[in-house]
Image 1 (cartoon, rainbow, N blue to C red):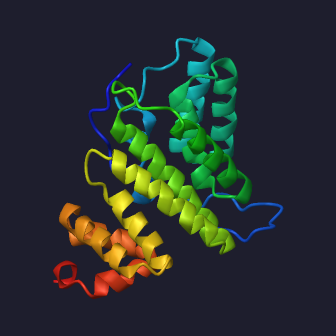
Image 2 (cartoon, rainbow, N blue to C red; image 1 turned 30 degrees about the vertical axis):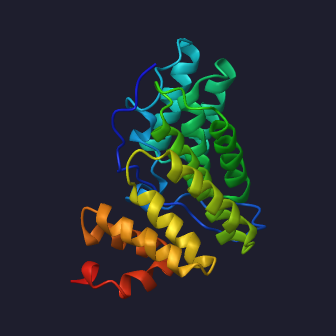
Length: 239
């Protein structure tokens, strides 16, 4: 197994939010591959953060087809089909489970979000082993499970998902081995939506210290409108 030695902060995607009850979903927009750091999973599952590829040749070939469909052709449906075929050949192909969850999360239909949530929940049940599944990797998985709860809250308005997201971010924070803006800003958003401004301000303080530039923080403010309250009151990021 490989060890997690680096986390790429450039996983790019543009999820689509469409009203519930739509029978036919619109295709992914042309802006599908715009930078969207909140969906960080780590080197698009292609680097050293995940275990080695499957030894099953058919599963590996399906993975490659899915990866091309997702990252090059921008075809989420074809990618999901290929990844599911890979898992039929090798049900323990971990990086395919991760990639499939990411595709489902980005596809962002009601059905695909539910599937992503279920996959991340199963992956989060695996105990870190200190080798390839480090605490940092486990934290990233928790973080993304939390994000699925945010998406479900945004789609339905059900505040129960905020409580679920808060729990996942708390667990992700406890496992984290380094500060990650994707975790801190998303969690601050959850806190604000729950009316816990002081907690949100503490998370924002950590995010400001960890951010390489105000522009990076601005990306999260653009994604999570509630964060504008913290942005406007912080002269450090507006100067």
